[in-house]
Image (cartoon, rainbow, N blue to C red; front, side, top):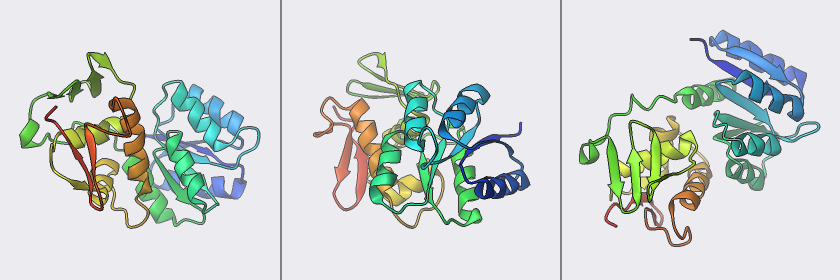
Length: 234
């Protein structure tokens, strides 16, 4: 089944280039030129992925992303920005974006990110031998691999698909310190040779949902200067 990408950008030249290259890769596309229309189309069309500019008329990309996530829509979102400020990138990720790319960007890099974010099937990821069952238990948490859900004290947590993939990978490798680069490769599914803040922001958002006290995490632990590991002995 052909995947569909929604492009939301107020620069027609950018939209035309993106549409051309996406179609060349076999994707269907729909387009919107302001945030309000982009939000409406995202809710109506149910695209498989959204390329979302930050600076938009009527409603900026941050607000579009936040609104979609607030309504439970977990479509993969790649934020596009012409600005280099670190705060823009972090703010987008904290509002639920899966990834970001800064203009000007190479089409090859963008397509690699689109393809990586399209890989949503978890069935291809074989469970680690240390936890080969369909449910991983750790203290008050239960990670249900078949249902793609995480429960805490019997209550299902509202996780995005990316957050589930992150906790699943860590929980399947309990006690093993995983570098940010490996997490980018295994969870985001592409090699990343630059800013790994994406991982740190994702972990912070995940802790806010998993942990009783995110400032003193009991499950997703930081190994300073190296990466993160999952503590299963609660």
